[in-house]
Length: 362
Picture 1: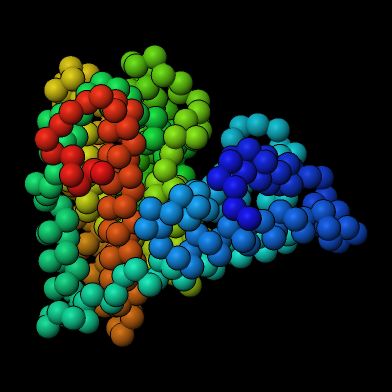
Picture 2 (picture 1 turned 90 degrees about the vertical axis):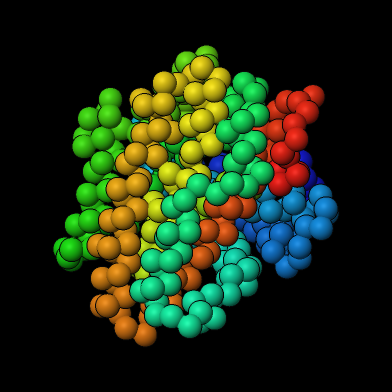
């Protein structure tokens, strides 16, 4: 049975306790039943989540949220939280790896079915395709959601935007932090350059997460990482979990580079509405906040990703260009879903607000 209240209360607490169990693999080896009930529950949830479409079914939506939260709990073990080192004793646990593989298998199968290999439908070369896609995605689109953020988002909605975005804005579960390393080459050098800029060149005051924390502090909101976890839609968690999956599976390196290319190319356009809302609400001068910083820097980073990462990789791996394009197209879908879910969450934060441009938000 699927209980929408279980994922955050019982199941998630149980999973966190499992992650911190001393000698977890030894315990499970001696008593397999220690993990049996949770495994069956998560297996049931993932089957419901990804073998059917929501169509307004609260059970499916609850299952998607539960499975994405579970994947996040497993992924976060590989980030350092400046806490007790014993919390990481099971970082390489076979038990946890098996749970993660089970959850990711169905999620990734569903995700692959959502995006056709688009470039095969175009009478053009892969290089021309990635350039044309980038040109399309770097331009702010005049859609109802973007206009609503820019023109009508109120302060309650803006605070919800900060809460939802803080999970990634403060934690910085960066794809790059998981993907760098290995034999040096020009592509790795470019990715490293982007990583260094996003992490403030080693200066905490210049780190992008510091800019995000400042926005929260200005609103008297918590700057503690994961403080607003309960408000994060499954689609936003999906973007984070997918980043972990691609970055930590080197067999998916071309897909990862395609996905990260989309992120860097499209961020100026996707953040433009947020930046305009902050200015309209009197919360920014349009220059020194997190949104405007990303708009400026990612215009440059997006160009680097096309010219110094995507195109060179296509030349290095002829016949496999489709993997990079597939990663790009998948990321575009994921971030579009996350953007729509974020807009809906912001609208729900001020349900009395009456706006004219919310058809795409519903």
